[in-house]
Image (cartoon, rainbow, N blue to C red; front, side):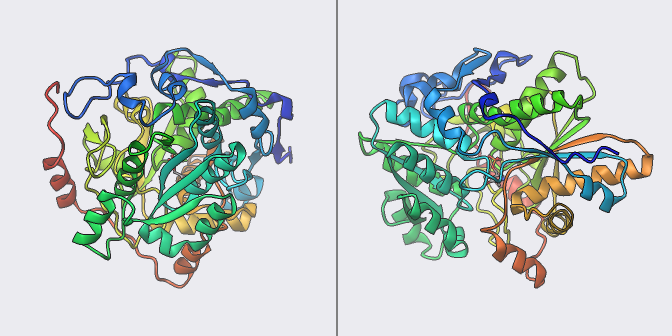
Length: 456
Ligand SMILES: *Cc1c(COP(=O)(O)O)cnc(C)c1O
């Protein structure tokens, strides 16, 4: 039996270009609309928020986009990342399936997020921007952008969802170590935050609200831009560095996945892994490839939300994006531990789902932790609670193989480690974590509250 466990590329094999799926979509993405006019937005509408290079990438239909040498040099600190064969997990499950995972937890902040944070910091620096604002949920994005800011000497201000700020002090300390400033959202630093605090001083916050604060802060200052850690096309583009490495590694060992699983919050880590593979499904070379997006049952955006135009934030400051959505007023239940709590989803993933090229499933929290513990005891890695969602799906697929006797190849997008999430594991072990199903009435309420779009 072949016992090889780690598959690696040389540092000089870090991809030199990102892959842009917009070049290969069978139908173009629905346009992003201006909330006032209902017309597709142009570059000028986004210029107060983002550097022009990123705005160009957002709409580019070039198939390949060069990775700047300065960005590649920083990628060298942790890339290429390793592809693992999960021999010990396969044995523990007694499955004929071959399970692989591409592990992004070896980056400085411990997840895939710096793949885009470093690129975004670079393009802002090149345009003379001094300061970037952003939001963070569980804290990984805030810490990744703080690291990116440190790489290019930029000031970073992070609005962190209040409940996570209270539950995860160590993420804040990581941000401060990299030189950033982190405040709980809602905060007294913006009008949106002050209004919310006046209404509800104990508001646990939400990603949508923190986005509103970060956007308000950025548009109020000329030296400041805003940065988003997921959802947008350019973010998914930067993440493809990971999928390109994975594809090259699998080619080298003459393997190809039958099933790819990943967890989706805004969709960036998983899209980054699967987009170079979905290309093969679109062009007909791999018609049977299955791509499974896994989300929490407590925030079931793709599995239960409508596919409709909605705001990206809760205050309605952002353009209107066509996506599966739970409504921009979504406030996640505070019982939930993971970071997959955004009301919307990357338009690229939504579009591919709508076209039937990818599928989605929702998992309950307790089952995901059980899967994460199984994984940790077999493979050693203690995974982020987000990642546990797709580990659960991978284990279920591997167990189906055990029933059917099929030796399918399963590839897991392993987005990061859970070393700063031990409080969530503690809650799981002590029986304090509960499952929570997002109620149907709330989805109906959100539907009624969707912005009206003339062109629909
Ligand atoms: C942020 C994060 C996610 C979810 O974000 P995506 O944009 O959907 O990738 C998943 N896993 C980890 C470890 C994260 O930090």
